[in-house]
Length: 166
Image 1 (cartoon, rainbow, N blue to C red):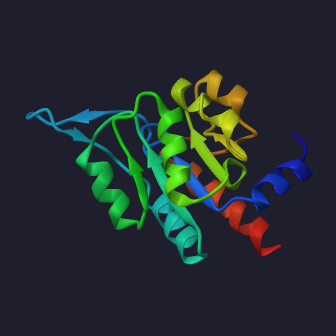
Image 2: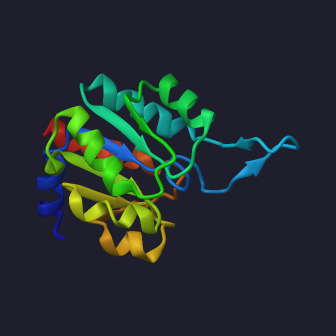
Image 3: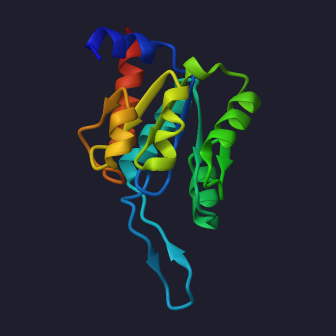
């Protein structure tokens, strides 16, 4: 894809959808003695999401796992759409865009693994984090320089906001 094509796709984006594990986190799962999953989020990704919302755009998470931590972090950041426990993400994608009232071409989706690769052909801008599985990279229009959980979401948001500033 040329830079011009990437910029053209980015200009249309109104809704940013993200996977969680491997995108907003580094993909590792930490468990407490009680079996509770502990997740680590990068502050720069959080600030990017806040900036995205301040610019008037919306966001959502589609995650294959269920976690109260994801719900809590999403609410802290003002993420409007959170769909968890969705191993098959295509139906969740269709439900979220219907709820948001946007067209698929107006959606950017960032993911890192095979279930995410199934959503990528449906969106206006498909993004894989730099350490994504090869299936996600192959389906992506853009691959970030940064790894999942290490600022990749912020990198994408900065790109989107820069394009929209003109």
